[in-house]
Length: 322
Image (cartoon, rainbow, N blue to C red):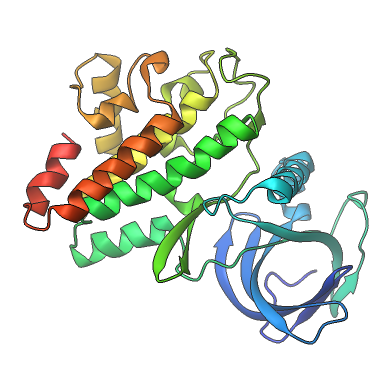
């Protein structure tokens, strides 16, 4: 039986170089994410990168498809070839290895072996965790997010999503705080969209399509995803941005199932008002803002709050989420 986690000091080789395990930084249903020191072939200098390990055998047991993993690698690789957008996590490398009792042995190959294989995806290391942990920290400490920070976060998220929608014709379909990583670059927080296992390539931003299966994380699912309603797939990402925005606004109050049920019911019955939030979670998906518009408006609002140092921040937070 293979070990569930790797230990500090373990090394893994890929065709591009060597990864030395530093520590585990995250854990999910199908594996873990590790901080590693990566040394490329024919070099002596190392750099810190994140290494995502996916247990393919565990996925098979839970009747999940390896194709989703392959798709994640393919999409990340394609985007990283041409994108300079700092709000999308960068792909660096991927490889497969077999795992046996007594250690890991190299098996840099295709995905043909049925059991005991792990897929590894190397990507940017984001030292400040993810947005989910950031929100939990504020809830735990009873701290509000400043309006300037809220709008700056939404601007960054929308900037990455707009790039996916417009340049790559991709809908993410599983946008949530846990899939938004936070790096520290040039003295500020930089949010990066990650986890591309459920992305959908679309032929046109205006094309109406059906959802072939239940996909995404229920808490952040749009009504179209939940009820398998035909729509332009990009609108489901805008809904998710709206829910993330609301979650940031109400902190330190926790967004729970009762709150989400209330939001969905009000949207369903057209009881929401015309605040900025409702331009993202409009009942009619065709009335939701584009990612570009969210990006532009959030940037201007963040700049406004930056200038208004004397504004009552608690009043501003509840106004934007009303």
